[in-house]
Length: 192
Image 1 (tube, rainbow, N blue to C red):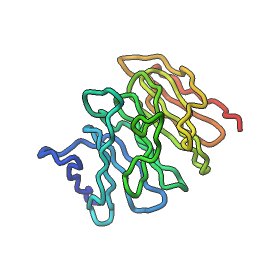
Image 2: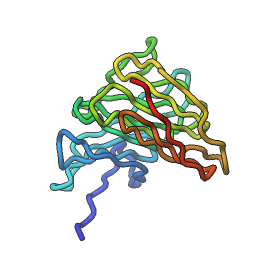
Image 3: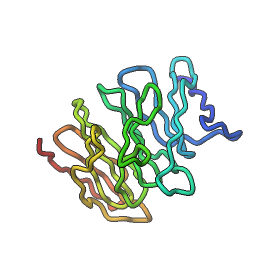
């Protein structure tokens, strides 16, 4: 087995940060995007075992604290974009190579709005389209257009159980599949 990649804390705390989500950067293998309990993300060079860049998300409008854990990550297959789902109920889109926010929604920080609980799952259209799906512990799945940040569709898909609802979402391009704390797996067709 391979040795673990060194996990230097991206936010500079003396205690190592706790990784909670992962996504490969498809355009720049072997780079791994990692989300942390502190809300930060970092890009690791897996072959060298080093941190290439750290990404600190903007807090939500009017928030007195940070974004909360980066609970879910996804990278666009052909654009230099990544999406992080955070515990504060927002998903943030940023440039994977620089870490800079890429979308300004209503003069607010660059994030997708709409969930009433932690964004626990994110998935992008694997065919290179512009849809990003988010799932939340509020039980809702939302489909956003990454070009505009507009929510194209939203529906409550799962019931909460023990404070959680949606655990994962898969975007296949023509359908969404979700799994939740209510022990259900739901598949929906997407219209073009």
